[in-house]
Length: 91
Image (cartoon, rainbow, N blue to C red):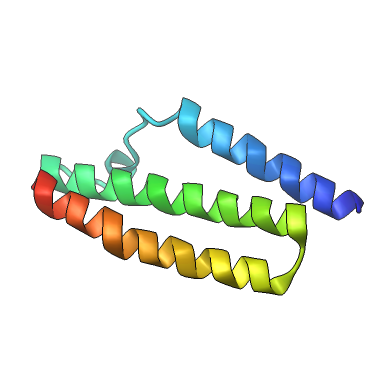
């Protein structure tokens, strides 16, 4: 019970941190100069962090494998259906 609570709190704090630090340029740490590369790297990094913390939160709340696996499928589908077309339209 304590580990579920700790995981849940860490995931909520992680989601809040991703929101608060959304303006930080992650691509700059990688040495990327091109604007389009910065855009793609930053959005992808934030998307993956949000997904990881959300899946961790689902695990902490429900702690059943079937829910975690289903949420992974939903996140991958979201990446294919939303993130990649968003990049194509934005570029």
